[in-house]
Image (tube, rainbow, N blue to C red):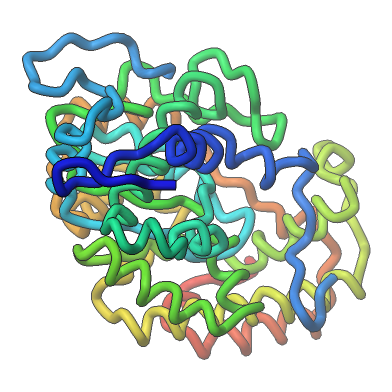
Length: 357
């Protein structure tokens, strides 16, 4: 698979095939079914390459390294490895797209490193010491592909859910300026679900951190639990359009009960991550990105130790929704179900601020 030359490992065509298959097309396996499905738990389951920019850098902005020296130079400068945790339907995609638009951050949409980590356990790859470089190359490649063809492109060829494009016009999606300081993976709900269903993969987090050899941080995206759970119900029964009249409500009490259980299973898992990693986890309330975009982005940039220039903030602000989606009012909730959620929420400091009303 990999052979050596002058003491340095050189990727053969087989290694290049790995790069292609794991970087350019990983979305194929994850998006065979376009429609989102309900969380699957072991129990109680229910750019655009942004407009071309010419700057005087050693690396052309946005270019993937095309030789071994550039590979080392580019990825040795990365300072932080970032992962997302959270809950499906909590605005992770918007948050990831906004961060990928930053000139020093590369965050592809849903690579799912925890699920794909076995790729990097190949003995020959481990022996060469190229795990980190392959991982960073794959993440970088996927970000670039998505900015050209995917859900971050100016004119997408593929949209993951058939609805949204998260293009930030004129920004740095799929590319970078000068150097990459932060690289990572936006698979928030999926990462938490994987860790809940397979707790042994908490060890995978440690292996990833050891492999990249730099601080690993987490963004925990939080949305009102009543809205998250209600959205799961709407999507399970394909009822999003039915409730657009502002009058119709979906009444599925059994599904709602199961999703309440599922939601707090994820919450327990995220709380465990917060306890394990302490200050390396940042809670971000998704609605605050809409109501207080400048302040929220400055907090995130400070957490990641990157600049937060006014030009970047202005670019991002243009794509934000005008108001959050309050789906809790489109589903019938009994008093008992509301009380159950309120009681559970009090166990977690990051949920106590939310109410149904």
